[in-house]
Image 1 (cartoon, rainbow, N blue to C red):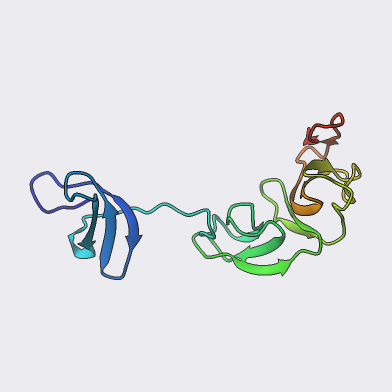
Image 2: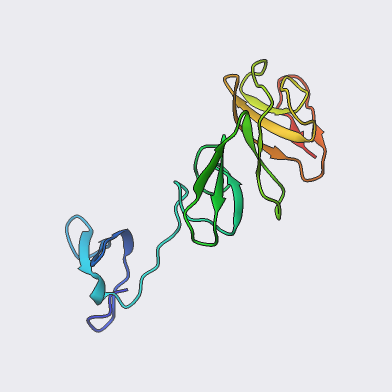
Length: 163
């Protein structure tokens, strides 16, 4: 929010630099784009990004469980707002665990017999029967441990799912 003038001004931030802020706004330029000195800003907020953004809390995360990174890698977050650091490339895929538990690598498994879709371990996918795996073109693309401990094998032609 710009504080100079009588009424102030609100704009959408597109980039933050060391001494300036790029914005998209109405009624100030033909393109709607401007750059302001950070000293002129009364305050500004930026939203987190899903493309490798910051961590929500301490622990291990699969890349597709918040950080917006590779689903087959395990990342470590040293705390809220920290940048995720790659901990390990999983041998098969990374498994998103239920809330309150660190995500883990599944180093033994295979999607080689599976078409694109979701499969319980043991249903065309070598893996834990309480885990739902995502396979894309016979390659792993992530997995989630069913919080109930039950993965349901669906009728042929339909994705399996957690109970």
